[in-house]
Image (cartoon, rainbow, N blue to C red; front, top):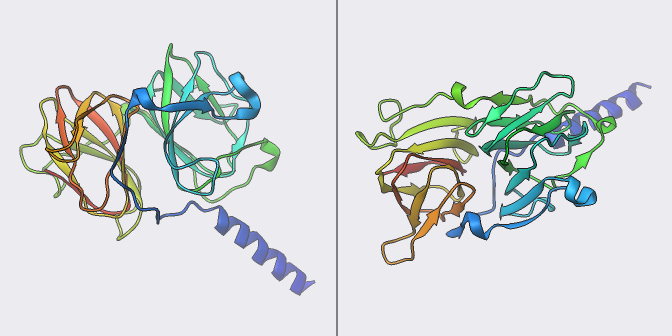
Length: 277
């Protein structure tokens, strides 16, 4: 009995360990751009067809075991059945009002610019209440699957819901890698700042910003959450106007040029440091 119990315990610990979200990303990013009007759309849950939210791919493939970033559109009044996911995902609201919580929880409508985290195995519902509702979702592994609550499990992570008004913004007085007098601000969202560990933050560029972001890691991906920015990889290359829902990646040591007419918030996910100049 003791041997059997020991084996069972090891198996349970192994399953929980496997369920932990990866903290690194070994897929190197490249210089690439997906503008909001060029996103390819399908169904988030193809088995439910048009009863499912729409999903638009930005990078990676959410149907495979790899990191991916994608957009999700919800119709006004949408409310999912209680369910779980096999993997953890993180989201930022781009348009509308979204709620993500236990089915019995009072609605906490998150407006555009808010952030949430949904752990693997945690039972929840997702609902939308704006005329237009869109979010960006980030996963570190796949495939992204929907499963019944009877399959619920605890992977040790916890759900997070952060209204945009509760974000803490830091400026050049607080962070070393932003040039003084730039009025650039950042709000850290998740991850670790240890070497080669994934992390993500929101970067707020003021209206009239003209500068660049230098990627110092193997992996750098950025999604425009609000505002509008003109982007080009060098002065010799074509310019792209990136509106909310647009994405750009940068290879290591690339230094994309950015130009804004209006205040712009960008979600940045990297495997290391970057510099705003």
